Length: 64
Image (cartoon, rainbow, N blue to C red; front, side, top):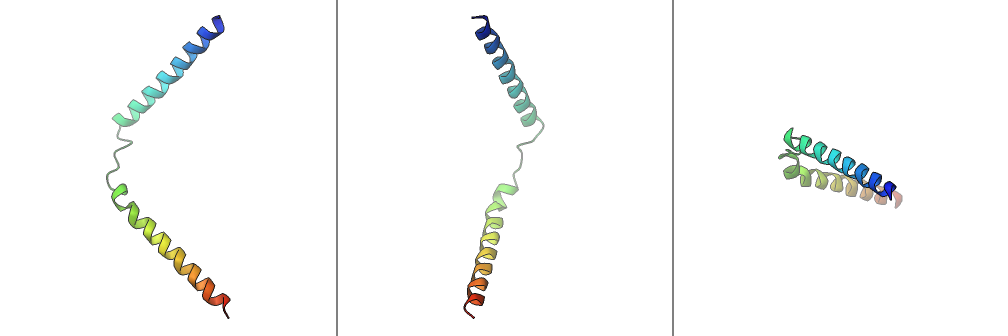
């Protein structure tokens, strides 16, 4: 029974540590990225179009 008490205390200690780390990160602006989400879709489209171009070149070259 005393092992359960120790495990509960340890888990509460770890959970408190994670809560403090999260609050510290929020307070210091770790999640304040307002620019990247608005342009992320543009970067994904560029990568996809480059991949499509490479695949079409490979298909065309394999025909010869």
